[in-house]
Every structure is written in structure tokens, then in C-alpha cells.
Length: 238
Figure 1: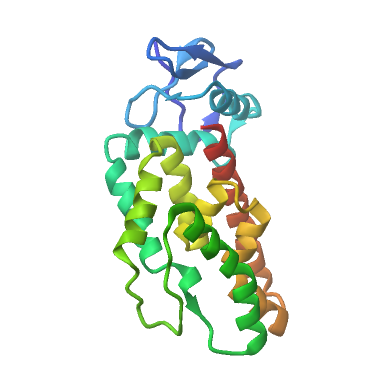
Figure 2: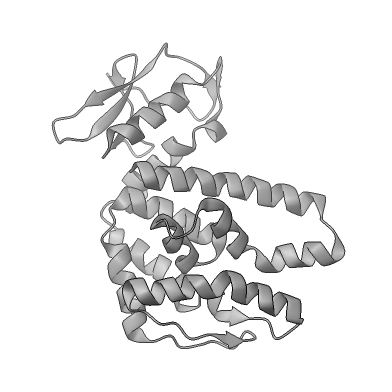
């Protein structure tokens, strides 16, 4: 028998454990029964560390299963059901961010914002250039910049080495930051999570410093940062 977790409902198992699979992956089991993804595939991941983390979030559930408290499970489901076999499409989706990356479009004024963008963004672009031999053009305003094809190809090759689980996490980090280059720099440990998040929110944080915090916007950003941290940890464990 298999265990198919409900979207919502009472806890129906005593313990989540990790089982070794014949293909070398690690499956999640509830009371010894393999867990299935929404599409009916085995919930199995490439590393024991990630499997332990997923089992841990299932063991941390109370009397009611709360789907929002299962972020690693959701990411694993996404990797298995939505990305495996479609890796090239996901690589291209991430690359589309790099083609018009946040880091390349600078403010014309005020001087304080221009300086802050340069301070936080220029080191990332310098790292990308040194690490991947991939220079990116920088301009002011919103007029589209055609980036060097060789640079985009270098980034594509770097991303294409990742499997579906790391791609799932990188895609989430890219969409949350609006920058494939920030996400990649964090994934490759050039930036820690706080530095990556600060770089991704230069404009919003500067506006808040000028006009004051908006409570709802601050709460949304806090929630999104939590999602970023989960994706970051998932990437590391995968």
C-alpha cells in the first residue's frame, strides 16, 4: 500500500521515516508505506539529508496536517511531477530572467540609490564575469539591453548541470528575487541568503527608507524571504 497525503485533514500516521530505494534514491514513508506525489510518483529524493528533512517536517505535524508547513515536500513534488523530464524548459525559464536581469537596469537618480545599486550589484556581476567568463551589459532606465549571446550561453551551461531538484529550488529563488544572477550567486555560495535578499530588494528598501515602511508590504516580503530560505536550504540538501 502507499500513503497519499491529503491536502488538508487529520494526521493519519504515527511516524515518517526514510527508506532506501533500489535506484539509490531515498523515499519517504509514513508508517512504512511509501508516499506518493500528487501525480502518483514515488516521493523519493537524491540525498539522504534532503529525505531526512522532508521526513522531519512530516514528523513535526500536529493533529492536523498543515500543507503550508511542508515546504520541502512541495518543492520535491514540483521537481518530480513538474521538472523531471522537462529540465531544458526550466533552464530556459531561468535563463529568460538572466536575459533581462535586474542587476543590469540601474536608476538614473537619486545619487544615493544609484550608489547603493552599484555597491550591491557590481560585485555580483564581477563574480559572474570571473566565474563564467560572462560579462553583462549595464544601462539606466528600462530600455531592453541585448546581452552577449556567449554570456547567456555560459549561464545556461552552468544551470543545465543541475538536476530537477536543484532546478526546482533555483527557479523559486530566481522568481522570488527577480534575478537569475542573484539566485545563481547565492546557490554557488558567493552570496549568503541575507546578502542575496538585500541585493534583490534595493529599490523597495530604498523607497521604504524614504517614505516609511508599509506594514502589509513588509509582511509580504517577510513571507517571501521565508520561502527563499526554504528553497535555499532545499538546494543545499539536494
